[in-house]
Image (tube, rainbow, N blue to C red; front, side, top):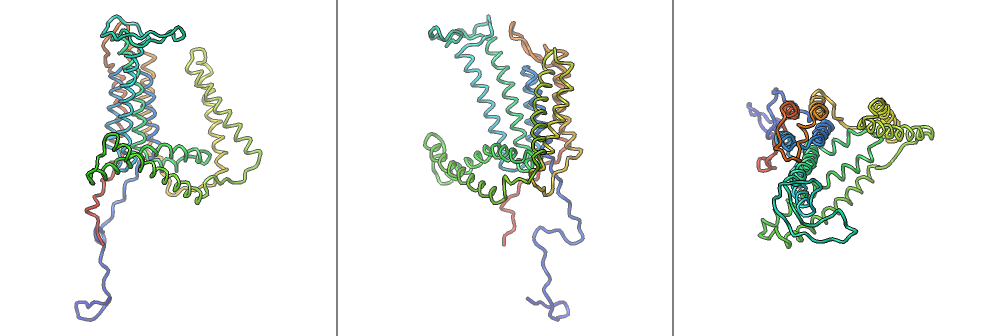
Length: 393
């Protein structure tokens, strides 16, 4: 197409800038690089480790609050990030189920504060040690509540890692020797988020059509399309993996393969023996050296095993200062709670016989608050795009 310029002479039409494009000469800000997904997993697993070291409900509630706040302010606007709510519901279900078992099946903790008494069902002689019904004491319920809250906090921490870390970016960061195992783990971890997204999409579609989406009928009519979509997605994934040469390995000498297997197996055995030595009082002298030697051997085996997998990485995620800070904050929480458990175990494990109200220890609570550091040092997630504001052609 030809246009006329100001003098009236015909000339070429000037290209018009696309909608949303900044004018010439204006610097375009670079998008902030997201945090390394491994840092999120290390932070979440460290918080989960801290949760396993205490049964104090106040500290556990503080751990859940810290992880929930970080997820609320740093969760990206992606479908897999919505799985955090499912993990919270799973944790609540575990809590209710554990209390129900303590009420129906009784508790091994003796107690004197009887809340109520259920009709007891007589059992045969071969079921000694098991009872149905009977007295329900406050001490037994408190013990079950503390124990279930610890497991619930661990599940919520794992849910925080699923909501914050991208599974595909985490897979790119794995060493070559663990790539095939990592693919299987990533597929398993992304199953629940995809399933939740499909259920929400189908329920919204049924509501728009005026059809029921609750109850047994709605569950059946939603479940069949979800199952069909899962099967189609699995077939598409298998075809894509086959087209990309998944499982292809390079030629490696026999000596290297045997050395890799010996180093990896020996390293795992060393890690197990060293961990056992650290957990027992008699193995405190040899536990740490054996653990370090096992880790070194396992890492050497993984490095050699990576030579079998010919892979390249496109735009790998760097491990920057922010990743170090996030990982260090979680490790500090776990280390300080482990230290508090050795120095003042009574503050982390409140007694139930006799029944005492739990108290919040000050410096372990301050140590848990260190887990809030990722909320301030990591970049905020990008705002979700509104499809109504997208340019149309």
